[in-house]
Length: 342
Image (cartoon, rainbow, N blue to C red):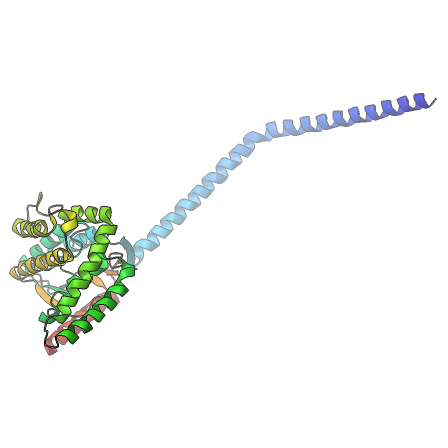
């Protein structure tokens, strides 16, 4: 009797399970048919939605581009990316001799960008000489301490920032100061104490960099030695002289190149550029204070750059803002008045 009851219960459970499975299959079948029916419409809706979104995105980009183009001041990259834009600014400058506006330039060195983009540097020099020959007034203010007792201070600082590891600059300054004190105690009458201490300490730290970073050091020398006069139609003699100076100091075994070679190369190249600019009636204003901003203004637009973490990380902008243009004029007037007082 118990056995019959058990079999009966079992049959009922099996029947219930089959019924549930049948119902589930039926539901899934209906869902599948619905999906099959509406899926083309879903695809169409998706495509339409995507097209609407793409159109809105395109409109947004156009709006942003319009805003960017309408701004009076724009970011144009990090040094040396903007060097070619300086030449574009000079190229757009009027060659009209009746134009009384000045081209105003502030640079930390006269060879600005020469060893990072030689072609842009050559073009910049040519544009400036051509503009001057056409009658445009050009003024270049640059950092150059001309005091005989510390002759070439600017070049030492350029070399230090560019060729000696940043973490060593503090140690270098301390050692130089201690050595100067020691030299003065030994000979109070010594007149070249600063120059002697400066040379000894800078050579020490430069040699350390040269030995520790041999591969990077050799790459930098090779890059600098790329000839300026190659394929140059304009101002050939100037760039030929510059390359002879570079070859004299740097075309030797890398381990024999000294701090003196680098700084003397910079100094001699600057002297050649001074002669060239003076021959083309370009006014030069040497400054004793280090510049915190470089700029090139043609009276209509100004390209300017602020230093980043290191000297060669300058961040460039271009602007037609009248307030900035007026600021550059005011800055030059201040420099001219200061030099006049001296």
